Image (cartoon, rainbow, N blue to C red; front, side):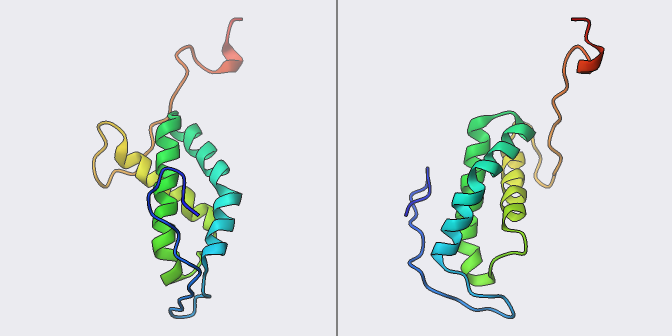
Amino acid sequence: MRWPGRGAAVPGGERVLTGDMAPITSPEIERVFREEYGRAVAVLIRACGDIELAEDAVQEAFAVAVERWPKTGLPPSPAGWIVTTARNRAIDRLPGSRTGSRTMPISRPASGPFWQSST
């Protein structure tokens, strides 16, 4: 299986143990991908307002997971790990972002809160 937008293939089912972590296989990473990709992209779109940036950041997060999780094991919250990693990648790619800055800009409506609108 190939991750969308990525040239690297998923490692072929090998198991690796490190410390107390349970081994993880490619099918487990694929399961997390199928279950969490859409939700992670939606969270990032909401946070940054850019569909392409959100998709790219989530794909990069899964590429990191493919490399890291077989060595370190599945994190306690795979979805949270993916969203956090993707959010950090998106922040790093925003125009004017400085390395080490971890705040996502919040878009605010120009006319104030919706409950105060005159329409």
